[in-house]
Length: 228
Image 1 (tube, one colour):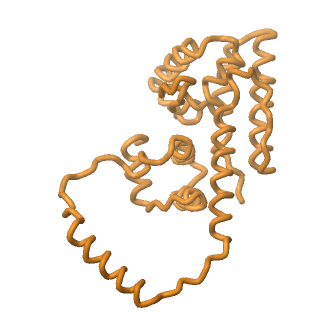
Image 2 (cartoon, one colour):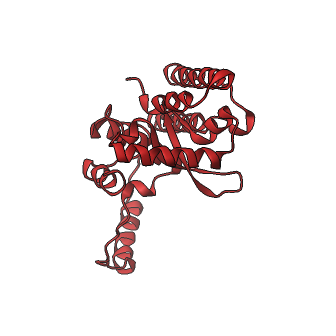
Image 3 (cartoon, helix red, strand yellow):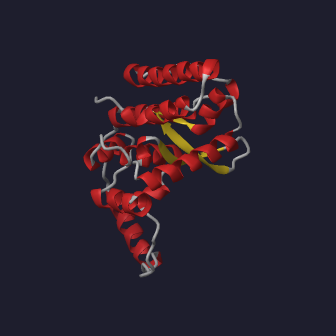
């Protein structure tokens, strides 16, 4: 398996804890930097990626996924002991996330308890889902025994379905298929789709291992809607 570089971002909620400032203040700083980047035509996805998170009371709020280069950029804005401490913390966090993916084992990050690595939790959930899918695929299945009653019941059900199933309407659904995925899976797709390291095949295969089958066209439409 290739190195999953999409994990190598830190959520701004965690970075604000490392910096010792409120998350809303860090968001203001990042948005100001983004304005500078846009004026200078600097690629934003090399530093900051727009994202969302769910807080303790269930609200969906804005945040940013910050790349290692983005953390380095923030570190340059600091001086003295504060800058050195932040640099050490984010380097350790990236190293531990890499270790988590390579060893397929949980790693406790050295960050404040209220700001624990939400991306790591999402990855653990994805790995658990993969294991559950593999267990179901490898579980022996009992042979299906067909009887006259089975066949007759099946035919009756088909006839009833034809009578009760409403005709599909021509109303167009403008919502992309990827938008219906679980929040953690969609965050993973967002990070992969904005990275130059992954092709549509890579994204498609990663989703397939987690039980989600999407076409290249669905991935392209999602990227076009949100990231182009």
